Image 1 (cartoon, rainbow, N blue to C red):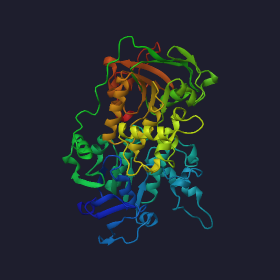
Image 2 (cartoon, one colour):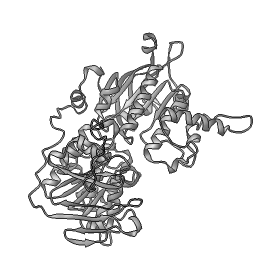
Image 3 (tube, one colour):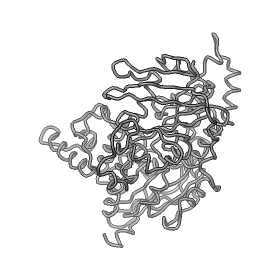
Image 4 (cartoon, rainbow, N blue to C red):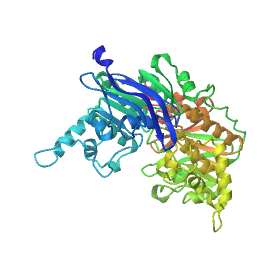
Length: 532
């Protein structure tokens, strides 16, 4: 690719403003996207990133300002009409954070939806299947083009979205948190594909809260704060610390708080014995102590979430045999979340949009849903509900323009804080949190980490499931590592090191089997994060 093509302006906005009713959310943005550049957009949740990319891709109209697209001739055209259909026709493609797939159709049908390959009379499904497989092969994906999308795992659906972008011959490719549901291996494949797009002169907009990813692939970084531009910078000029500081407007000297030490001989508040998951031959056992953060680590699909959902009665154990569960020494049978709640256990799901919150309902309604038993007899005590909600807003720093909005209109970070406030209002003593900071900006991450530290300091006990090893190590007293649906080790002290966790997560070591390390273990001891 020539230097000339690399510098062609593909899409730009000048003095861009966007309002929803009387509230202006974007204030005079000037952003230029060039072919052959990866342009990262950074900002806390609620900074305006999603609104910006919706305008660029035609899903939202701008309120004022200019939107310009460079034609093949090199001439910039002022776009007076702009919608998603026109945008895609011009090669501007958005891969949404929330998937835009037709669940009832096959993978191949989704890839070519709106861009179908036609025969003389009917769709050429054979050609679509063949071409879809070519796109998936580029992604090193083994997804069956004829598989129904509703049967796919979340990470596979993301790969289908990326394959769709390939099929549309994008000139501007907008990726909104594309790695949030991908393994590190899958993320590396995506980065290789992004580099291929870049070499072909495609302008790439990349939105991510993972600063190491931004550092790895970005050419230009634009930072937004409260709907305003902090600035656009060459990526080489900013360290990760610089990025964090500019995003939040303050220094983040310590992302992780100092965690309270685990007391000696602390009470066992949760004991799980001989839990067997479907498809596994070996059971798992673990204990949680009062005032402890017990991390659960492992690769995607290792069974971390499955274990907890089985304990809580949300999944059936193997052969209806879930072993035994004790809460503070009392054997219990937790058949649903309400029975767990009655025993002082709360669960914060990783799927905050699907099952954590009712997105079409109001904030106060969502907040009270898990603790209705506290504020109602025959009727809801609306005064008590309002007082508790106001207190939660302050305690958890839930930010919104208007308290009357529905939960779906909150930013991702504020949705997560609302979900945390919701489960804690039931006053649990044992809290299970699954992927608490997925898709969350660094400022909100720090807030959530400090909330966790405060909970532990006040005598709560917490199980933390996370794919972020840094997060696991930074918060946990001990770490349980899962491998293929079984517990392979519980690590603590000097063992709490990234490399050691990965050895257990990949099956190289297992504390609960009397087997010697694999013969080639020394050869593979240099395992990297990319293999996670």
